[in-house]
Length: 283
Image (cartoon, rainbow, N blue to C red; front, side, top):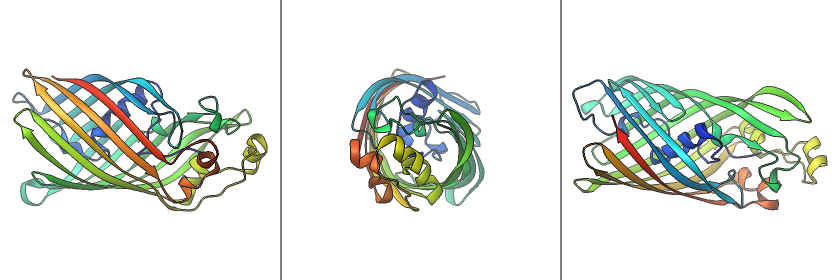
């Protein structure tokens, strides 16, 4: 009854960490971390920010939340991006521009509770989501592209009973451009889209018979297809030896059967906008 991986719902701390990583819209961008400031295989950046984002993907309301941020890289192999952990298994091509690897992440942005918004009343609760899968990426000095395919599971609660269930498969595709406007100012823009299988769209956008009785919404069984597309742009300003300030704007539009869900058409909206600002320190 909600959107999935690439959209936002800043639930507590873990969620905010994932949202802060919107500056790398898809989690596969391990190589986009700032270069180390010293001769070490480790590169760690931590920070804090504030983010205004929809209560859940498809919501008509937004809220402001604190957004902690953590980025860790080791030897250009292992990485942590907020709630995501991944490994670059293969690097090949000129200057190792092509990457293939595996990734797993909690999906707090895909959590929702019927008490969060009137659009969710009677729909129960989804929490404790986790996705795992593979990714591939390409990066030149300015251009980058990536694709990630993951499959997940969530803890779902309806009618007072909890159950763990598969939340289906999602494929994300992103293409972007980054450049330095000045020696200490970097700009990045990325367009992205997301496809989800029928199980995924039904998990987050479907309305079962029981939920229909509880909410008055029409039963709805969405099919596989494109669920969203959008664009993210950031400005990153470095000052001192280790500090950075990042501003973020993300626009995303629900598509296909996700856009037509009664959860969205009755009380939500298809256009979603998030803005944020983050302060980071590189250790």
